[in-house]
Length: 525
Image 1 (cartoon, one colour):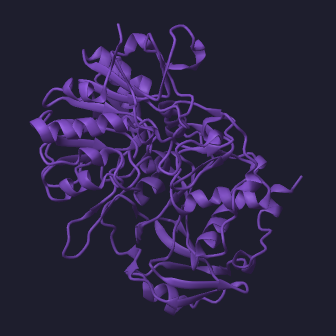
Image 2 (cartoon, helix red, strand yellow; image 1 turned 120 degrees about the vertical axis):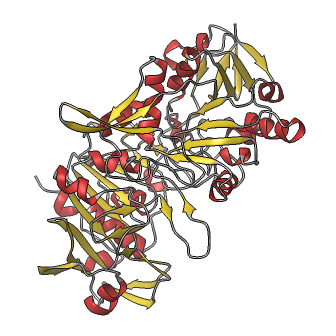
Image 3 (cartoon, one colour; image 1 turned 90 degrees about the vertical axis):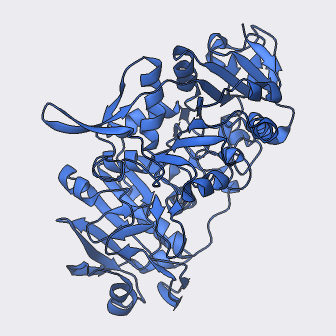
């Protein structure tokens, strides 16, 4: 029988050294009021201590809310996540070697919960091979304090796979919108349908407890059964939040009805992007789209592709998806990444990654922080001279990039470069402070070798030029008008790329206010 308790009471239920699982993305699914109570209880009593936290996506608002609440030395001993960049206090402890940390692929983590719930030994997949998650490289370990092996290489029918080990779950800390008196949980105000059901089942079948924070309480038997996402039979405790700030839908908004499917918002009401190098990159990446294609957009500049396609009037010609589970509509950028305006359908987090990992996407447009001469990409860990490494994690990057037939990596050519986009060309005002095209990336989040073996089509789009991975080599195929090949590109790289014999100029219209570059793609009969 479910019990309704306070956040302070919930904090006292978590034992020392417990393994605790959460579900969601950003602030969606995050039980903020319970997290605050756990931190306060630890400060007062030293309990619970030495927790092992398990999460999929980034959890938090990149400020003070989210997983960062638990970033107090001694409270958490081990942390396993796909993305750790938004939890600054936790991240600092990892960087200082005071907390063990693994970063694993997001789709692997959210689907490993189902393996745990079913008492299977773990998850077998090719996702992560030849990347830093591969135990022959780093095994997903993010610092020297991390020694536990969570991943093994195995062979099945003569092929290599990675085996991600299952583990028992002691506590599930989840969030929904409404709980009835029987503990049935709805997600009415949430954007994504996260992996909360799988986490609850994993805890229940491990002999653990399930605690859910909600915003509202309803009379028993008053909820439509198809709206219930976590059955009350799986829930032990419910906390009805007393602070509205503990129930934000995303990092950016308390509640946007269009993200929850409760309103269709005119997309014309969403401001268009100003003309800049970001818009140029998003436009050029969008030119790789095809009519009726199924597409994923990554965080950052890739998410801007949704804006340029909407502005051009062709959003109905493709289906954009989010890794959090949305089909159709317009995926949102930060601080609302993971949600979509006017989605046509929303499925659970794990099911979307089943589609992605099985090769269901036609195209993925992903970010690019570092690239090297072998075509490898790094978005997860960066060496900073004289400082501790900057740690981010891969999110869903590995799952998507290794499983999709065509990949576009999109990002600026150099970090913090000042540029001017006008009159159909690009002007470099002052050069950047950090090169992105390096001899060898700091960490392999995407393997050019794996891509070549898999026969994937790989393109790298920047504002200065476009590269392709051809015969295992980075090759320049297009150059922006106003850019000098030697001075603005080759001298700004730590390796010498191949240059295509038929090097072309990027379309000058990409660098103008008016752009019709998608007409030829989507107006064809």
